[in-house]
Image 1 (cartoon, rainbow, N blue to C red):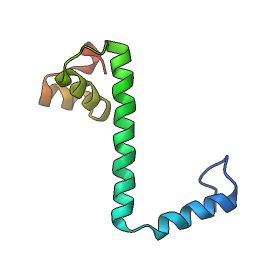
Image 2: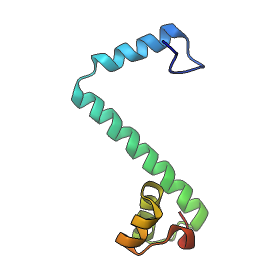
Image 3: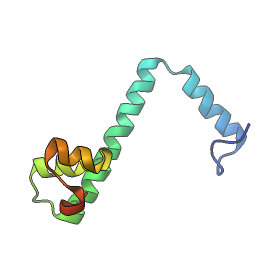
Image 4: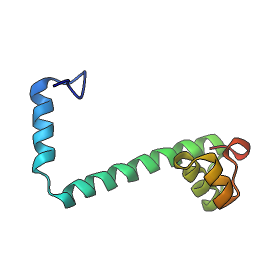
Length: 87
């Protein structure tokens, strides 16, 4: 089997996979939700750095949504064109 991580020893990778296997479904969902929250915080920080911290919460949410949704959906649903307004 090909290693999942090029920079991790097989022993550590096996430990990691065993840890995932031992997790309950609730623990796995909690871990995913936590990672998603952290990624959203990082993206928010980048957006605030690029466009200024004084933007409205609505604008921030639109910019965050445009990172996950395709351009056509953003225009159709929110009237927000990421190519014009930015991501």
